[in-house]
Length: 368
Ligand code: NAD
Image (cartoon, rainbow, N blue to C red):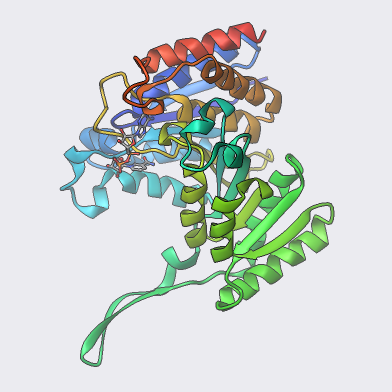
């Protein structure tokens, strides 16, 4: 049996720091759980631009397409702000998403009990929250044509086009239903079918996929504006939410903030299944390269570590091992371990990135 392959693209700023802790955890699984990966490291973003003059070398793209999963840290930083748009660090990430055809973006919003006080909402509204937003990532208004700024009469007009084909809606709906089968079996689909034709089609296709192939799933529909209200009023009513690119962009950020710090938020982007049944997949923390704290050992590695837990669950069918890792994170937080982003100014001394990694590894050891 060959080991599954992981391509690690640590990127810029705090990317290499947080990914360093993930690498230790990957080694732990190889030593302790008979779960070894063939890991390769490469460059993305500003780091790739510095070496190759491009934010993603063709060889790296080829490796990403061949790997069983890609783990990415973060890209960008002030050093690259004045670069031409075509070689900006973020273009490397966009190229990965596009060429791997990662159409389904999974953004969990999970509130660990120990951090419930950290939310801007009341503790009882968020404690125990565990929802998943599935955002369509490769179509919709961010990509639709025509787009641009045009002359019209004696003024200019800015145009973007919301466009979804039935097959684009179908595949992201399936992705949400498959996910729901591993969770509570409940999906809420959000659009604006009251005012948008693309929303009417979205609702029809999602319902048809459910009726045809997922009759076990409890499907509800909600207008996205009401969805935004419900997310901050009573988020625990949801389990899986599926929505388009634009609404998903906004709703997933809104849901994420229910849980406190950016340093806690993982994500997965999945594409069509390979011949072996595994989807093409990229896992990355939601946060950026945090130039304000880069190189200081202050970054919280948990978002990146939880992204690896998602890889265990969604790429490698290791749900139990993913839960082991999530439980280790939960235990460490319950025991009071905090990086600076999880503390107020009066809350004592924070621990470093490496110390957070140490604590999580100790909790993994204790789980054996
Ligand atoms: P950011 O997410 O990098 O940082 C926002 C704030 O959150 C900062 O104060 C930062 O210190 C803090 N923060 C973020 N992650 C943290 C962590 N793990 N631990 C502790 N604190 C953390 O967003 P930004 O400042 O708007 O962007 C900085 C750079 O990152 C820009 O170049 C931007 O383009 C890029 N960016 C990249 C990605 C990505 O790689 N996916 C995402 C967002 C932003």
